[in-house]
Amino acid sequence: MRKSLAFACAVGALVCAAPAAARELVSFDSAKLILTNGITTVEGSGGGGLATWATISGMGTDRAVGISAHATLVELPDYRLDTHGIAIGIRDRVELAYARQNFNTRAVGAALGLGRGFQFNQDIFSAKVRLAGDLVYGPGWLPQVSVGVEHKRSLDAGIVRAVGAKASAGTDFTVSATKLFLGASVLANATVRVTEANQFGLLGFGGDKHAGRSVQFEGSLAYMLSRRLVVGGEWRTRPDNLGIAREDDAKDLFVAWAAGRHVTVTAAYVDVGSVATFKNQRGGLLQLQVAY
Image (cartoon, rainbow, N blue to C red):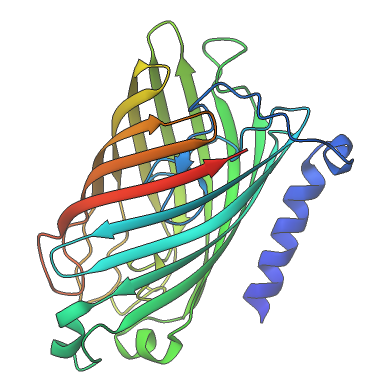
């Protein structure tokens, strides 16, 4: 209850930090440059597939509202992750998002005594506000800088506590700096995340090895082959809190294609290392995003 109240206060603070004009009635202009809205992370915020960026979801500029919806599938040797959600961008200043994660354990579930195909489920409510800079315009040395909050709630509280998690809900805090260097066709991003999540929160928060939050890093580098095609890679460090399930850094190599102004298709090679005692979890990510 306290954490939910704290999250509500944090969201309220972020919204209040936006200009008063952001609360006025605005239209959809869909006028951002193609692909500069980013794609959607597996946690529902705007960015890359793994890393949160300073970008604000949707195609709306600072004169309008933007909106995006996504569906993502991650296929690994022993698991499958499905996520879907929606995000709203207000005048390219504030982002509010929701995502549902469904983590299918396939045969591993039977081996762990949970039942074949058992799913861990999680709701993620997030907010982000742009503090300074602009992704594309403005001084070349000044990136777009945003702060964010992600509140995660496992729908399997009893089970995640049974595997050693200290809590079934938790809140991540992020600070991101992102810049698109148009002359070089290069996008660079760096994010600092304060978190206690185990496997993105799917296995709860905190554990017997480490119960509190720790500081983690997320980095992204992408190159625009054309105005509709981007290739890149990401690296994300993660806490290792549970004694029974070592957690490794996650990384990906991705290709994002703008099939149209409003549709982006992303494919990636993903390596998340060890998951719940099963090593070498490397596979593919496929995402469809629709944005206005």
